[in-house]
Image (cartoon, rainbow, N blue to C red):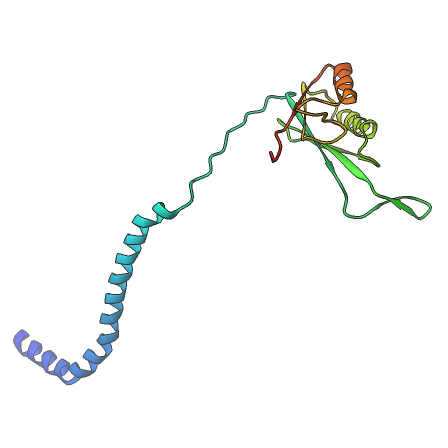
Length: 172
């Protein structure tokens, strides 16, 4: 009985064999394409590291509480209204503590040393604590020459008994 069923099934398949072959032909092409794609992917996986740029390395910096406070000067895009319909170009001295990332800012109207120092004092007052080191980029009015502070900034730091540190040129 099983042999009879098998012969009947084979006969039924024979009637549709040509149609089945035509419908399976694209599947065979896809299987060949997948095999070729796998070969190319494997090759690229091997070769890609040879052409990749060198990985960037980063230094892991650890900050202690009260160690650093970094300052910078930010200039708003538009002028600042100062009253009676008048505006002036302003600057903001911005401070950020290294450990807690707490920040403060003070509006000033020039980049001269007295205004910058007033901005620093205002930021420190708003933060509520005095860090051991003030970090600046090479801002004119704060930085003298060759990594030295200006006289006004050195006197300011001496009065507060804090250290200073200047970032290297082109250091983000």
